[in-house]
Image (cartoon, rainbow, N blue to C red; front, side, top):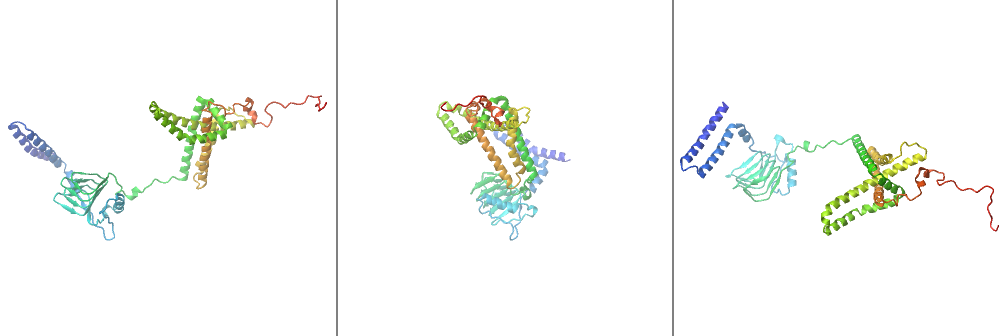
Length: 432
C-alpha cells in the first residue's frame, strides 16, 4: 500500500508537466521557453516525489529546528558577544560555558540570544542584538542587528539578508550573497563541544621499567646497526679503515684538533662551495650534485672515523691481552670492531639502565654524550688527516716493523740482545 500511494502521487504530479509539454508541441514546435519550463517542472517534480517518498527526512528536518537556550540563573554561565575580535578568548569562554552541559544547558547572552539547532531568520524578520547558534546552521535572510557566532555549524547570508556586525564560525564556514557589515572569521574545526573527559585524557606515563627496556632496546639497535656497517667497511675497505685506525692510535691529539677545526669549518666550507658554484657559469647546473656529494662525504667521514676509533680500541685491547699471554682464537678486524663498538655502547647502556635515577641518570647521559663526542671528533679528524685512509703520514707506519708486533708491549728489550765485552780483553786506558 505505501508503494501504491507513492506511485499514484507521482502520477498526479506528472500530469501538469505532461500537459505543458503537449501544449508546447501543439504550437510552433518546441521552443526554448517551453524547454526551460519543462526542465524546471521536472526538477520540481523530483523534489516533490522525494519529499513524498521519504517522510522520515521531513520529520528529521523538523526535529533539527532551533530551540532557544534558556537563560542562566544569576551568577550562571554568561558570554558577551559584543566584541568577538579576540577569537581565542571567545572560544575559551564558549568551551567553559558549553562543555559537558548536555540537556541542562543554560546560557545568558547579554543584549542577544542563544539557540541550539538549525536557526533561520526569514526575510520579513529582524533580530535585534547578538546571536549565538550551537550545534546547527544559521540561515539569515532577514536583518540581524548584531554579531553572529556559530559553534559546529555553517552560516548562510542570503541575498537581501543583512548581518550588521561580525561573523565568527567555530567548526563551520560562511557563504552567501548577503550583506555583512563587519569582519568574517571562519574556523573549520573547534574543540568547544569536546567533553573535557575526552579532551584532557593523556596517554599513561610509561613506568621506569618500561622506559628502561625501551632505552636498552634502542642501544642494542644502534649496536647492531654500527656492527653491520663496520663489517661492510672491513669487507670492502679494510686497508683504509686500518690506516684511519692507526692514525687515531698514534696521533690522537692531532686527530682531535683536526676534527674540532673540521666541525667548525663545515658550514663555512659549504657556503664557499655553494657561492663558488653559483658564480660560475656551469656550476649552477652542478650545484645539486655538489650539495649531495658534500653531505655524503661528511657523513661517511664522521661515521667511518667513529668506526675507526672502535677498531683502534678493540685492537689495543686484543693486543694487550695477547701480550699478557691470553690465547685469542682469531685476532682480526671483525673482532676489533665488535669489541670497540661494545665498549662504546657500554656507556649508553649504563645510561639506559640507570637513567631513571634523578641526578645520576643525567650525569651518566652527559658523560656518555661527552665521551662519544670526543671520540667521534678524533675519528673525524683522523679521517681528514689520512685522507680517508690514503695518507699514512700520521698512522705510525714509518717506524720499524718490529715495533708493530705484539712484543713492543713486553718489558724485555725489543731490538736484539745488548752487546757484551769479549772475554780476555781489557779496556784500553788513556795514554797507553
